[in-house]
Length: 173
Image (cartoon, rainbow, N blue to C red; front, top):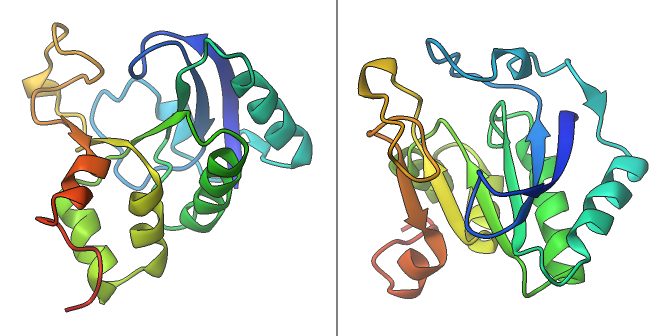
């Protein structure tokens, strides 16, 4: 997996002071995207052990609330395995930190994929994150007053709560 940047002490991409991992690669190519440079899955830098160590180190201060994975799209099909690996490492090292993921996929699209339609990694990712900011950026629905999202079709979803209530199932029925 490739990435573009690790931003420490970010206040704009989730609740609290966070670290943001900007993943390379996006399959959506939203019109007037704020990060088109991140669309190329081969762009940026290889996410290697040095990058992993930098990411984990940036999460170590108590005042850091958690990590946000953005991009590009961390849930692009070719990023999923590595994203799950990173999420698991973060959960192991910092179980109290929250994990947010931005994706152009809607929650419903991801749930469908998790229910054995396409990809076994999605259910594992959703089981291990706290919040999903979903949906493609839509220029005609741009709204700069919204917290943590760029257009009104995008949602901030408490994934943990959705799974806990049992109204959402990630497994094949």
